[in-house]
Image (cartoon, rainbow, N blue to C red; front, side):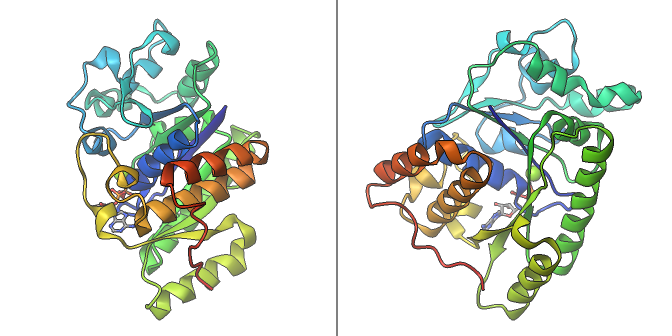
Length: 278
Ligand SMILES: Nc1ncnc2c1ncn2[C@@H]1O[C@H](COP(=O)(O)OP(=O)(O)O)[C@@H](O)[C@H]1O
Ligand SMILES: [Mg+2]
């Protein structure tokens, strides 16, 4: 099972948008995918059209030793399932102050086999016990980053946090991937920030980029995504390519299936024609 945390300490960097669209691309590629909203603000939950969930059907259950995750009902969306966030998450945060409180989600995932090929966590723009839980439970990390000064700084701080978690709490965590989002290739500084991160982090900076796209900025509130609304548009192509690249890096043995499924869904051959930032 692929377990991936989407993190960046800077807000507005495209975390939630990336979680939803990578999940949809995985779903379209035949991966049974579960998205877990661990942001107490629950933006992902709202963006996929779900109301405030009953606590017992929300990601709060991960912090309850009485509950088995495999028995919790999840919310089916078009290409993936969602375990939504309850606003009560912010209330229990103060109680989760013991060193072992970073282990809850990992233990919940390990309780029993889940019927999923991929689990993705969306996290808040801060180092909280919830984002630490996501990192401790994950094998992979995606850091969406806008090519601007503060977001790049936030992404580098996030990288440091991930390395700290890897050193002290989760040695199975792989080096994170940076994914540039909201890229405008006409802007010189966007190229400059990409060169900067490439020099420092090499291949951990993904070749695929997510360009600014009106379709991506529109929320349909029903669990549908760009893959439904504009399957041949740049938003769908960019997230399809980014997901392909991620799979090539973290699960190469499943790539053939992924690419062929996506191209069949798209009906226009593999979405490979994307421009990469130089
Ligand atoms: N590629 C994109 N093009 C245009 N708008 C985008 C794109 N990605 C995200 N957005 C918009 O930017 C805002 C912040 O994105 P979001 O995914 O919520 O970031 P985060 O979860 O990191 O706070 C949202 O309004 C979203 O619709
Ligand atoms: Mg968000």
